[in-house]
Image (tube, rainbow, N blue to C red; front, side, top):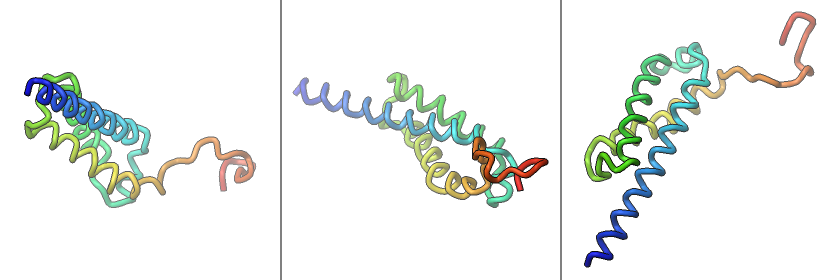
Length: 113
């Protein structure tokens, strides 16, 4: 019986780590996206998403470090916030993201055209 509980605990810990990786990915993507892209896509502002995802990362770190159990509500809500960003907001703002390093093929004498 003890072996099953130990295996199950490791399984949920692995899920918490994977969820934390997704939360970090969402925060990094939100930081890299310019603020006007959120408004152009009709989403909440960049500052609001940074606050939401920052809180989600703190909670996710607590879940990954076993300070919060995976069955508590907070790590689940944190993962859902990151999932909403990655599934809804990221595709919407992606088309408005600045493309750096696109080469000189689209450069005019005073910048891109």
